[in-house]
Amino acid sequence: MKSAILVKKFHAYDLDAIQGFVEESFSLFSESGPMFGPGQRVLLKPNLLRAFAPERAVTTHPAVLEAVCRALRDCRVGEIVLSDSPAFGSLEAVAHKAGYGPVLKRHAVRLAPLHNPVPMDSEEGVTHLKISGDIDNYDRIINLPKVKSHVQMTLTLAIKNLFGLVIGKRKPVLHCLVDNDKVRFGRMLVDIARRVSPCLTLIDGIVAMEGNGPASGTPYPLGLLAAGRDMTALDRVLVEILGAPLEQVYTLEAARQKGYGNHALEAIELFGETGLDALRVADFHLSSAPMDISFNPLRVARSFVRHLFEVGVREKWAHRD
Image 1: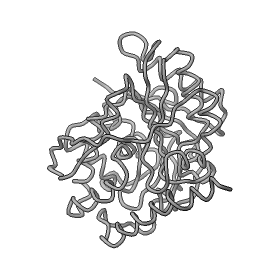
Image 2: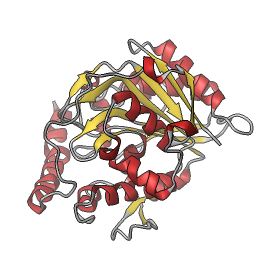
Image 3: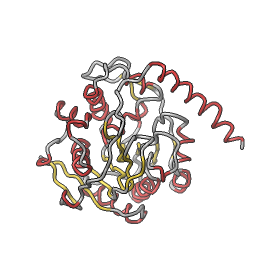
Image 4: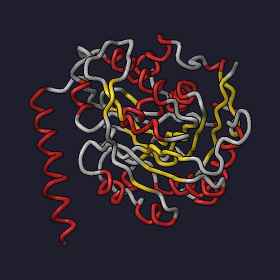
């Protein structure tokens, strides 16, 4: 069976237009009855890597978040919760810097830092792999990634975004446990994606990031939103649009090896903008300085210290001011 992917062009973060896209996604990807209904608890997982303003294109744009919240409230869901595990800083501080504060208040969205790390079965045998057991408390999970280049994995898209459900500084440790094998790391990401199993992924590509992402690149006006249930198919379509070398998108190669989702374009059906030729871009730049997947142990230690400084010193002083 072909995987359906919805793609539409957007020239700006027009809230009403984005909400229309979200509602179309809810309808298109519902299987038996409405995807969302009264009383459900829904978890939103955006990309909140670090504390940057929306125009830096590091984090999922607040207009996308608000459009999803509007559509969910129209479905009369019981509770909307937002969670992620930033690389540096607390979830509250990073969400505030990303412009989420007013959205959370308007739509009564609860911020929930990740807790309860539980072991996760992985075919890769990666030791110490745990994700937040909190995800089992929700009826539905919506994955809200950002289209970005990535110095280690070439691109970070739908599958990669769910790595954020690994709590805190466990993430750089896991980077060091795969023998610098990017495809093996990708297979671990696929295992996480399979475990999380979001009901919908809606990816923000209105302003993407090119260059040395996921935090130090530059904004790129890609001008689209895309959505689907099959994260492999969604990532495959975006790789085709961006013109990235398929063999260097390690998460997709991992998905192909593990038979997770539809990898072949002929097994994917586009809705909305149905012609890939009209969507392809020729000037999207990947990282100019690709890095190994493993981190130097000294860098990991520095990362721990920096995170403690962000949360324990800088954020407390900012709050006092």
